[in-house]
Image 1 (tube, one colour):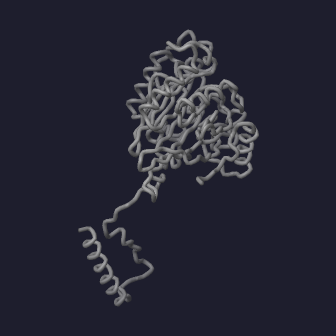
Image 2: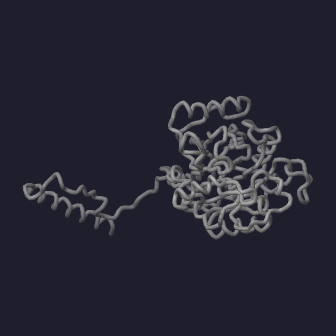
Length: 381
């Protein structure tokens, strides 16, 4: 039926065009509207924006991962006023933070960030946190910054998610749920369905916990291995986030490397790390990528950190007709966590300066000579 209708419309269009050419003195050609035949007939389209369907019938999933997403202020220490002032300067529309990244995040299938802070209005601070130099919180009303900027998932296992105790933690999880944002912890499996499969996520706070007993396990290594192995039996694609390493370090510790390898050996398809606030190398281990640290992304913890360079990691997984999944490579998008030169205005922005881009790539290569990948492509291969 569609073919007969299409043929009829083509004939009609050709007849119309011939008549128009015969009476071309009737038209002002400079003002003629350019009408495509696709505007006149029904067509079947194949999605290609994120590499959805390949010619061999396979499907490609594009995943974006970033480092620390930390917004808000510190009501306890009365810090963070500069972030609040920046927010006011933008009419209290927190989407200003993502204005230079939104178009990139909208083109993938899932974006995962480390949300380091709390969505809560409580002023309660547990005794264990009163010695901290900074405590993060923001009104839950601003949580729309995540779904409205195509951030579909967050990891919550970090050293700031409990800044306002159990109440703040539960507020944060409820707020994410209410806004349709998937979250994961070491106990909460986050799941995100996309293009016929479900991505499963776990996240862990490591830092000083590697060798400490966890529940029925004698150490965190064993728990991670068991958790991932169980999850991999249920889901085809597993992403694990780790909050680990030493702050301000550009290289991972031996414990990080051990944990990253354990995660992959147990079934993780991708390992993503953060906490150091600095970029670390990427390792390819047994065909899987381990991003040891993606540094900062949108970071309200410092209005002028010494290093404002970072990068966004993107990778693609191919699913063939039989359901088999393979990783098809990655690319990085070098960014600065600000859009201005002299300070952090909490607006991550892709870097266009070739020298700055080369500096980021050189840092990653130099710090990963013995274990990191050899190339950091900026485009898809």
